[in-house]
Image (tube, rainbow, N blue to C red):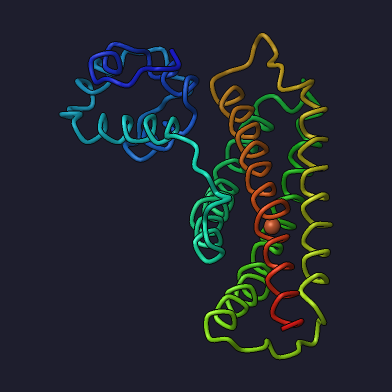
Length: 248
Ligand SMILES: [Fe+2]
């Protein structure tokens, strides 16, 4: 089920299976107001017929999402700093900002249906709210302070100028703060993973329960990629650039 990428396979699949194979497809069903959760055991072609939808747009949307998920890895080490920042903001920051309200809605739904039986879901809900708040703050600081400063250093290098001094001293100090915040976010998502027993679904899990676990897993995995790009590529290169400019 992981590689349904042609229209024929899609229309002959159950909509719940399409969502489970690739949870991002849930957005498409939500967009067309199709219940993929409690009414998910239906073939896509039957749903299209029932809803009187031609289906081409919907199927194209699904295929685009499935294909974008399997696009090739890029060599970020070869990116210049501005391009790397654009990538981080346009891909990872955008993802975090868009995923948070979706995951929150699904978590609320799972908690209201299953929270009494599986009490750890409430703690997950609280932890996710906490990490969301912290991350929104964190991304704002990066986009408003740190990243513009790195772009400023790149411009200084281009224009052969020495950077002016800043109230925060060298760039190492805001970077240290960002790294502390990365650790904090990573730890909360790790705690969520532990509470779910490594995302092991209970036998009576409904589609939204399954979907929420997939979304949380993806959120953690995206954060890992995102932090990797910042901690191991962007930040060390920005420190090196600043050193070179200061010691010129
Ligand atoms: Fe960050």
